[in-house]
Structure formats: C-alpha cells, structure tokens
Amino acid sequence: MDKTLLKQQIIEALNLEDITPADIQDDAPLFGEGLGLDSIDALELFVLLDKQYGIKLQNKEEGKQVFRSVDTMAEYIDAHRTK
Image 1 (cartoon, rainbow, N blue to C red):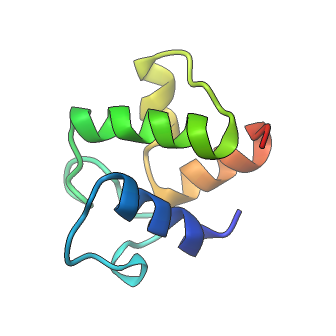
Image 2 (image 1 turned 180 degrees about the vertical axis):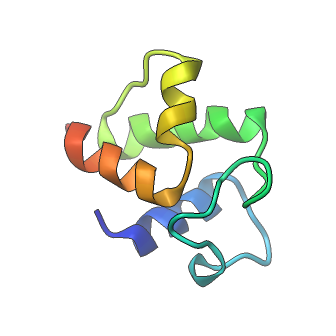
C-alpha cells in the first residue's frame, strides 16, 4: 500500500485544508493528539475504505484499531482489500 497515496485520500475525504501528505507521519495517531480527527471523520474513513478498497469494517471497535495511524490503515488495506 502506497502510504503517500493513502494520506492523499485521507486529506481529500476529510477536506483537510493546509495539510499535505508530508505533514502526516506514518506512525502518528490519527485521532486525539496526532492529526486530531473526530468521530465524524471516522465515518468518512469507513466510507473511504469501502469505496476505494472494498473493505467494510464491522464495528466501531474494529475501526479504532484500523484507524490508529496511517501505518495501521495501510497494513489493514494490504491484508483485506477486495479492489
């Protein structure tokens, strides 16, 4: 999984202005201290995984694990993508 591409998709899906892929560290938290995303952003990430990769997360707890960082998202996509 190309992490730069994934970062660009996150930026576009969440309309993050003034942020570039280089601004997002691969292992930084996406929620809380890191990028500072919230629960609405999490819903957008669920949609992103479904549309771009054919991945349907089952519940919020699974999402918390997958959306911990760009690294964890990329690993999950590599293991579960259908597109």
